[in-house]
Length: 357
Picture (cartoon, rainbow, N blue to C red):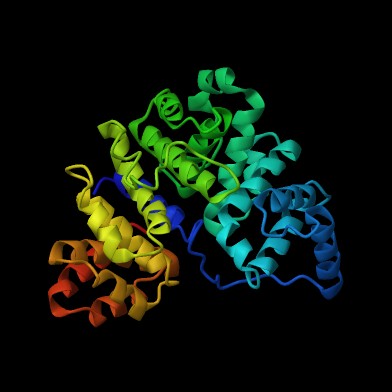
């Protein structure tokens, strides 16, 4: 497969797992604050939130205030990681909260490359997306579009489509959504200012991700419909559908109360040519929603009504296993635990996908 295709798909699997937003994982390295700093942070949170600790706007103000302190980016991430380990609400909102820290960082480090050097990839690289939201918001839509091809030019790895470069261009999609007040179709159109097709596709993915993130906060997007969970994927033009369907199952699971059987039914109604993409996205969510637990992931994929659904779910799940563990060991264990008719597609996917790392 062409690397131009592999890298954005790899990045999407890593970032999009809504584990991003709705289905948190327990990460391997949680940074603990000292007892005194923990008490101070809790007191500051209580002062800002005044009893409304389940309110996103409250946490947004809190982490923005932390990030603006001396050594504030590190301080904010240390606090977030500590809370992530013990606070379900922080887990569910971790990715958008890292956006907040990235947005604040731009006020102190207005150059994209400088802001990136301060960053942390905790919770699926949301910091870097927030940086791009801040950059685009600072320069304004007209100036951003005029120089859109150049905003990420100083990020290392442009020629090789590095993960940092992907995060930057993907982050432009988030930024364009923010500056347009979450006007999805307008933001997709703005992504088309980018010269490269790889860059445009990466930007589209940021637009669609932001659309789902907005729904998870104390805000509203008119581009998600509980009664039509395939929307907006079934309404956008063909060049945008792949990026959309790779994101949409996380919203679909939310409105179905995590009913995977219903998710498979909905995916069956996806646009022609994107049904398998939807099933594979469901597999990614099967892995993400279970913290890549072998038994639970297997059980969810086997809820598929037929071999096509189950095999595509396995493809998405095994890719997510590899992305999460940065190893093919656990993925191969998943393959070995599957029914015999699913083992080959699982192993073939594991072998080919692991080569992209």
